[in-house]
Image (cartoon, rainbow, N blue to C red; front, top):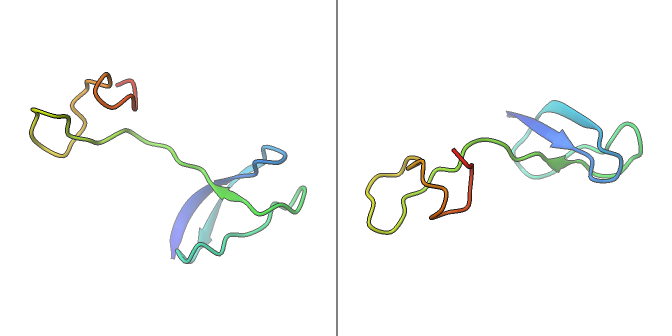
Length: 67
């Protein structure tokens, strides 16, 4: 079980739900459309020539989080 943030791409409704991580997500209580997992967080990558698996702070190499 996981606590996942969801957003409805139809009406914009947002919620958090505890669900199984099987991809069988609930429907929006407002409009009935299947909710989509809301992705958030920082971009973690290693750019060419840099080592490590954490955010380098250089989003020019990944276009990600704008750290």
